[in-house]
Length: 140
View 1 (tube, rainbow, N blue to C red):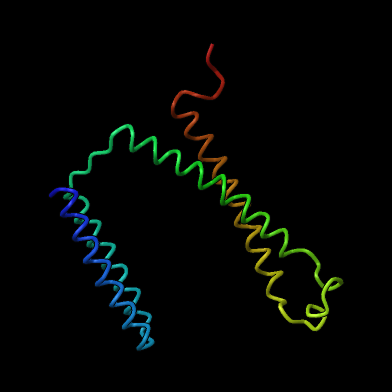
View 2 (cartoon, rainbow, N blue to C red):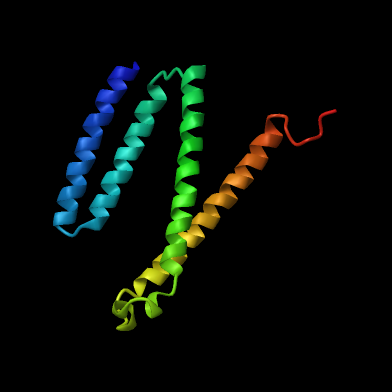
């Protein structure tokens, strides 16, 4: 099977899963939605294993650059968002003195933990890949 046929199947399966999830949510059947998504993922995994995907050096380089750019944008953005959500607004705005928007502090904590997790995950994966591909500073 070639890439073009795989993409057509992927679009069809995506539409089918979307329709299934839409119908399941309308009927408040979240089990059906979950099973529909998992079935679609399983089917696409089986179809992809039968597809011959050729990735050249240009594609690999583009993926690496896209991942670097995504990390460089997302990590600071979510970190700055966490910082602003954790600021004590009670002294600044009368809206916050009434106890409204108390969930913003919790959301800021979630963003802060996600930022720390993202940075730790990047550091661990960088260390692992650096050692795997000959880095590590032990060259002479």
